[in-house]
Image (cartoon, rainbow, N blue to C red):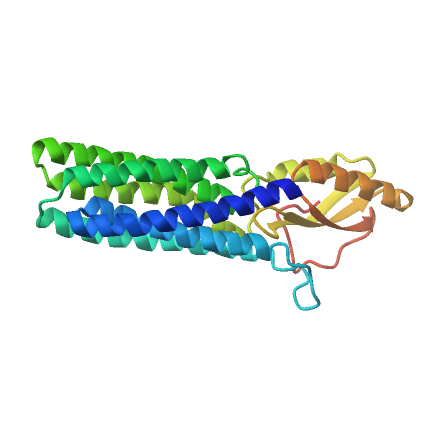
Length: 297
């Protein structure tokens, strides 16, 4: 990510944290005053987003920490751990929202529709603006994408709360407030599930979703002088940097440097930034059989 993009993202985090923190306080006070479960549940969700933005900003900065003798890859892995923690926080929030909404559904209480409409309307504006700040860079980093998706979902959720306020204002159907709370919970689960799955996969050093293992194998095999590939391992160093180690059999050891340069260029285009290659003579039998990979040739 270029310096300009980095500074832009950092500013987006700060603006997002400040705006959402102010709104959470406003929404919580309005929810207590009006007795709206929809506002309170949305405030809880937005509070989770504030924590998520703070953690993501911290991880974003930790990713720039230089490597040391104790942490030879630096602290890039923190970005993956933060994305996992954020997903877990959101799922815990879902559980609280569901419990509170069911309780309110069983014992509906009068709420003020006009207050709900006004506060939720402000939420639509704040979440939409904050999501827009992350839109440009959302495909470059899992944490940024997570922030964008959650804020965009929040904007839609706030639209739903506005609708419930209108319904309550004109019909006095107070139960609709709890139903909106449950719908909010479903939206959070839907928007969080992919983040949780991707974060867990990267935490376990799985192959990143944007990398095709078979396509990477094909790239290596089709390189001139390459006769075989094994011990191919692909994992993420962070939410933006992928790594690869592989044993490659070649027919001419004299072409080793040329082959290495070609492989690194081709793999970089395929999304692999950190490449470690061990070359073997075509007739050599690798003895490292304890670390087998899906590719053995």
